[in-house]
Amino acid sequence: MEQVEKLTYQGIAPWMIWVAVLVTIAACVGIAAVWKVVQISREEKKRKDDNIKAIAKHIVEISAPDIIKTVVENVKPQFDLLEQKMDEDKKRIEEAEKRSEQHDKALERIEKTLESVDKNIQDISEGFTFLARGTIASINHLRENGTGDMGELEEASRELSRYLTKRPVVPI
Figure 1 (cartoon, rainbow, N blue to C red):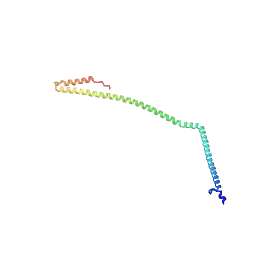
Figure 2: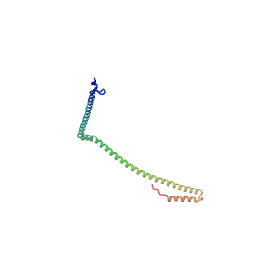
Figure 3: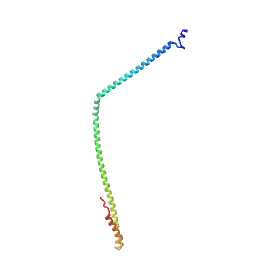
Figure 4: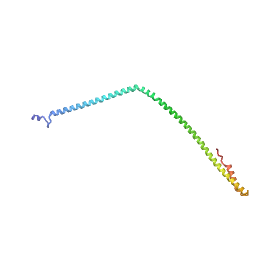
């Protein structure tokens, strides 16, 4: 037993060290194998993806003109109808703008006419005032049997004369 004890170092036998080394090597080999499998799996997936992309690209290159033709044939009538409606709307908008411009011009003419009518009404009102003063002065003079003060009658006559000769001519 002494000999067995000599072969150990602090209770660890050499065969245990060799087992630990072999287990470590086996673990490293196992990890390397798993890593290689993962790497192969990734490469295989990439190869399949590349193949699928190549097939899809080929399909698109072959069928794209047919797809475009089909889409154009199916969608073009709808776009043509939409364009026709837009042209009609544009014409209606232009006509509405023309009518609006005509209405604006007519409104301006009406406003000018109303201003002229207002001026004529004011002028007529002023004329009636002078005529009323003259009439009142004549009535007062006659009431006093023509013997009353002629100054009031002369003043009314001058005001009426001034109004009739100096008033502005207002267009209708």
